[in-house]
Image (tube, rainbow, N blue to C red):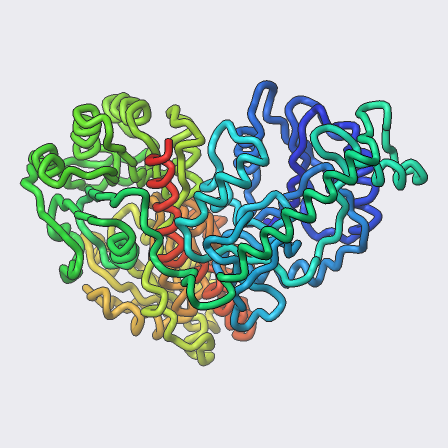
Length: 638
């Protein structure tokens, strides 16, 4: 899958510009390495290599753009307007380097035209700079490389391009970092139309060229009007430069905490605090006047982790816990602990939050909705830990309850693309859905070397509960079959964790050249050392909302052989680049995946280790905190 796409944002009323736009696009960028899309309302583009995206009639500009972006699957997008006519050859190699820089910096956007120019140098990237948090036109419709999900988070319904530039710039100030720009113009184009009229000079020049311009479709502004607009544009540029002068000094710290219009109090309701969530909560606690975490239990009984909350403000609720069973259509069942925090209303009244973030869609979220109804000035964000693979086979009562949640939440934090699809399917408005991801402490896991000696290069590792849902029995059977067909190979598989299937796994008949090693229960702090002992990570799960072990393994230098039923695999793993995805309920597909990883050379695996760490590093705690902050800002400004 491509990592970037070109999206030309247009409308039916500007379709007369499409022929000359794409004529010049192909002339000046014949080796464009990305798929190209044209977004409009109902008119279909008929150009080679261009895919039409149709938002339908009567949509605002920002609503249409949101629709176009949701149709793409790439991580990044090069955003263009149809009245930006290329006028110089595009250097694809340079553009790919800029895209790589944006991704390595976990950036939101990299503008390719320095108007205004950046003021903050970026170490290790001399060709680009960072835009100060208070810079004018920090959000701009000039040609830019965007992180697609970050752009979606900045959008608001009902905005025009000009409103998005102005109001989006204000909204961006809540994010101290992530907005970059090149120091030189690396994507040269000419703006040819404004407010529906051709610029006089552009019309004069393009009349002489046979590139498909239809000058009967729109007026040409007079030379005096064009001169006046050119003067205004020049004045605006000088104004921007003057505004940037104080920001070139250290008097205005671009990373200082931005005081909100009023101090916000945020309550976060969840079962417990797993170690990988704490870095994000620590960051959120610094961003708001007060953050209180309300827990149903200090730690789940099937989680052997130590409790570590400091310095967070944490309260454990009065909770009634009942037992249930999750029966999945893929054939597994799993006991569940269902928590009902009975004092939720009392705790929320006592804390009086401006925004409540409620994890999962159960009893606590239902009580949070009641608080929201009793306190109309408060806002409710539902943290939806759901995926299409985990929601199959859920009962009617749960389905009805979630319809209630959808109608009464101000926003949703969707853990992964599959969660976005699920929420949209049950009726959540796309404009209220903010896609996030699981993350972890990057520094903790990125300590291992990105090479492994030959004797460790193909050693397999699984970390987690030894339960049916993890798909270990059919995977080990497929692994044993592969080993029997390759008797010259020694196959090692380490299993870190414990659970009811341990004895069954230990009794499985295996090929003589297969060795299983049970590492038993581990503490979270032990994981980096455990990952360092292995060469490849295996996750054959039959259903997982995310599976943060994929993030951890990639950071620790392990290619991942992962199930397509975990969103972390869907979003982080690129086949042959940093791992392989497979369907664990398909024995033939599982065998093929094992064969690919076991036949990869040590050099190929080492390259995959490096690519995996890069991919996982992009999902940093800072980035996830920014996305949550965007949802909070959206609620408070809506």
